Image 1 (cartoon, rainbow, N blue to C red):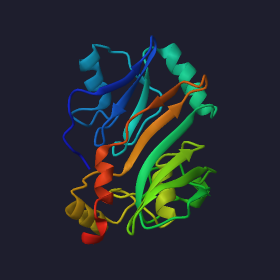
Image 2: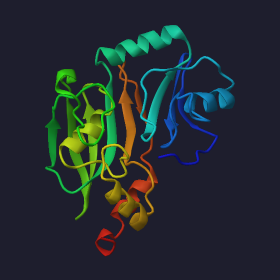
Image 3: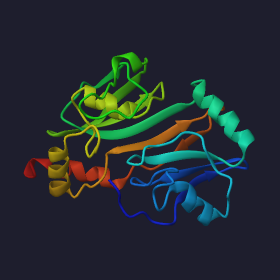
Length: 225
């Protein structure tokens, strides 16, 4: 799912050795096969060549992306993530309804699996944990906040799919026909997942505003399905 991306990126916060940026959906962090990626655009915008992604959002996911400005800061921040000393919160919208809150702890492989087997091969699965709570719901959708306690590839996307509640617009784990229907009815042409908050080990709290297009899915849905 590729969309045109504005060349000017929103810098949420910049310190002496790191910065936080609001990554648009449809833009990879550093895939060299894409004509443009987050690193190349930031290098042009800021005139900085040394940028080190501390974590990596999926291309389809928008939101808070943290980057170090030197290798020492990259090592320090990456260690915080690896040692689970960083809190990571996402918001997303799924089809259907869910309990008010809950925990998903299906073991997952750390590979980018497909929709037929989101958990991956049994011998490759490792423990992981996603907490969720419902922020808003309608007859057709649930708007959730997620906190991930582990960092497996596509963890939230896989857990949603395994719960029978794939993220709206997910091109890998969702139903293509359903996604196309939602795109046509709501003019919603992205995956509904956004990294909105990260709290670092020193309690520095960073936030990226939730995309306004998420509201489209809650505007008179009864008249559209």
